[in-house]
Figure 1 (cartoon, rainbow over the protein chains, first blue to last red):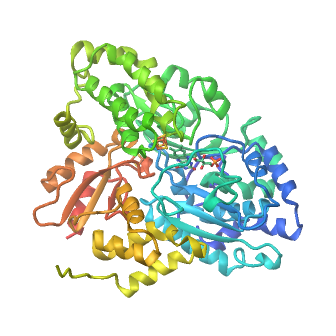
Figure 2: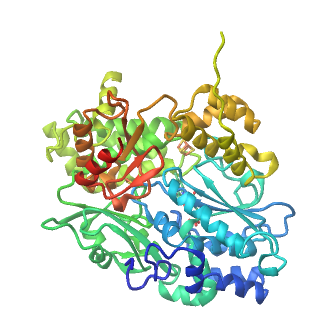
Figure 3: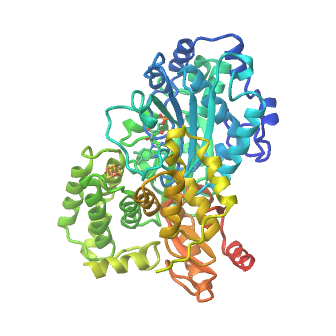
Length: 432
Length: 163
Ligand SMILES: Cc1cc2nc3c(=O)[nH]c(=O)nc-3n(C[C@H](O)[C@H](O)[C@H](O)COP(=O)(O)O)c2cc1C
Ligand code: SF4
Ligand code: FES
């Protein structure tokens, strides 16, 4: 049996093999959909209960799901879409892979209910390119759901029809991945210009449980404004890296304990509590923080996607930031100047500090470049690149200064130890 | 010049048709990502001729296909080794042994990142997060088959098996 923790509701009863329809049904699967269709529950009542549950988006922004669903213009004629974002790729985040691998029907059922609640005609789950096997498995789960009458025309002999497809890779519209400017928001102009609601995999997976047990019950699992349980991907210097499902509001110290604690003989140094795009926090603050959206925000970071990156006292914070900055430089789509130019700039400056070529003015420069990216771009990737930089310097300034003063990395981390270092650093030097 | 064209097989086109059927009739271009994956599976890499064929098949301007193919790292725009090994070296994986795995692979194969072994069997690539961080080190073979918890022993076994 897979162990996600004693309070798991999304991942309980899973053993890695029992993902198929029959086994999902044995775990009360599709009971929520049956209940909705047989009792003809009104979409507005479903959405009201979802609001009560205080389910917040699990993809990063934490936006209240019930509120988002209420923005869909239900009376709008013609096609409307529900899209599931299974494009997980933010360093540290690896929960949707487990959800799709071990419990794909919970996502399918959640999406069908979303289609019903928002009178959408079709849905797409876009699954990022690297997890091809999970895409194929999801297609198999869809075939099962169609064969059982949960998808397609007149679902379970009701007058509700809904089609659902898996999309491989990125770019649902077949274009290169360049976010479009908002507004207009997807609820009025989304996929193919039609009203669309996008939620994360884990958000959809929580919906059947809420319908079966009620919004109040889900809320009671967590805290006010932070309903339910949440999957946290705990990575880095812990004894048992993995996904753990805990009630929102669980103290960080307890989550750390579940993951086996900091690896032996080492002390906790820093934690990025919500995926690589969020501010880093030092150990002292984290050990006093609870894992819910509001508590982590109060502590100065964000819960984000729930990826908890743990670093012990052997970690060079400059090197850690260098690698993160490289990620954002690599991932920038290049559409907005502050992000396209700024992410490369940030990376080059952190790289020069790490390799002993930094100047003390670089610290102010980094802050300044980060400030000039944040809030000035089309999508949130710009902010995601800027936030780590500011927080790393804020809390670990002395380590940056040490690199600059001594013209070397005190952790003895010499190239080409770190990834990208060899080939990439070489080309940087040539360019300089 | 008489350029020989090797078109996609009927089997590949059938697979592309299955993808096209998922989207509204006037939105065939939504299948371009998977069409390119299918084409790459068949040919090993994606040439301009292949992109042009996909464009024609989906009724897209060729440049729109080039844009997609050049934007994402999963497409090989040049021939690669028989097995493309992509190792995630991003921060979380790096904290959990991916860098040691990288060194092991480099030594074992005798190549650096972005190089191909002289027998044409392996190409080594560094990748960004693949969404499997807790199971680091994570390695992807030919963009499709993911291997996790890749200790040195498991890396050796994998390489032995890929002959
Ligand atoms: C650069 C960037 C990367 C993102 N990556 C993801 C992702 O991998 N998965 C995801 O669900 N949301 C991701 N998001 C957030 C989505 O844009 C969107 O807010 C989310 O899917 C909404 O679902 P939710 O309300 O259920 O969280 C990302 C946003 C940005 C700006
Ligand atoms: S912020 Fe960056 S990733 Fe987002 S649209 Fe602008 S350039 Fe592209
Ligand atoms: S950081 Fe390597 S898979 Fe996510």
